[in-house]
Length: 446
Image (tube, rainbow, N blue to C red; front, side):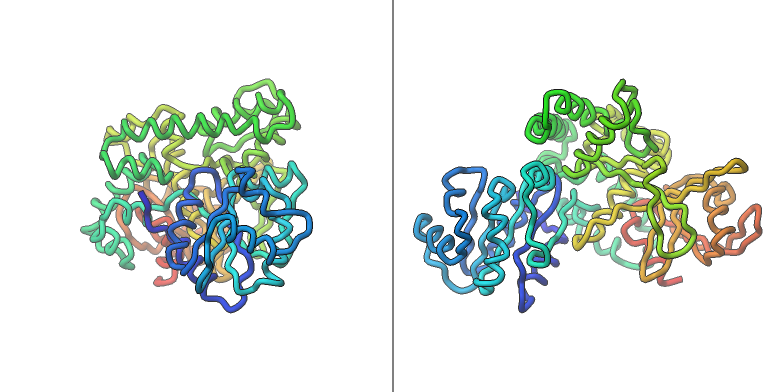
């Protein structure tokens, strides 16, 4: 089942540009890269797909680095007569260093040809085999699990989608969209899981998808581990990471294991290159530019909330009346918010920052810091009254920022607020959780 993905906009822009460099699609395994490119290929007069996991497709690329000869061989062997605009899709390109090297020559010697490459475990395999894309001669786009907006399109909630896009939102529409967001948080954004949900409307059918995905991720550990010990650590951490999401972690004895900081850190960074987890380091800065502090403990974010629910065994919590921002000690709300923010751009991967203040007198920790049009937007994900936002107030007192956002299981409202300690006035924009991807739009209208 094929769904509309927002990345199609970026693909169309790339197609329409006069000088289209070979394009590399980056993303975790099973987020839909191949499906997206095959669907996009329908807009070309000729679409050629090679899977470089197969030796029969790798043979077209040799050390002589002649793109014309390689392309002629492909067309001859595949019995293809290219006409008009032609897209060559090199899937699993990490399996052919020669194909990676050839990308620059496609750009220089065959500018009329459109070339897209992608691959599972792309970052890891390229590092392992010392492969690098030609600097300045390729472009990148990123694909993440499906966003809430993409989910609404997939389940054909056209009226809800229209109301979601209306800024400001109509109050009467909030309960319905909040209910749909709760469903999205349960199902997650993995395309296969969404497809099963659309087909059967049964979460038990989706569970089998999660189970198979986890099995494939664990099996992948053998592909990018350099030895059996590293493979064992990676397998263990893939299983443990969903239960640690939302937490600030230490590498030493991660997830109650006995592994030392060096081994655990290397394993978690490997999983980050596979885009299964994200290590979100904090900032202590109060003004632009905001720098991450890699000496501080990072906060862990997993690939997808549906996988988190399944792995942590909390799917049944969605059947209760518990607000989303209270579920699993607030972890689910923070996970899905981070996921939405990460998926808000397909041009680059910007892991959401968070802010901390750690000293002998007081500590504070703010969930998210967003930078939009050179403006810092502090964001707290929290239920309760606005007067309880202690960390947010600490940040406002120090920065004197005029506006902040609170995401919660409530209605949209704007209030003139004052911090408790410093009595600093500011505008607090209260947004339902499902509007995380639209924070900048709501700040702009204040």
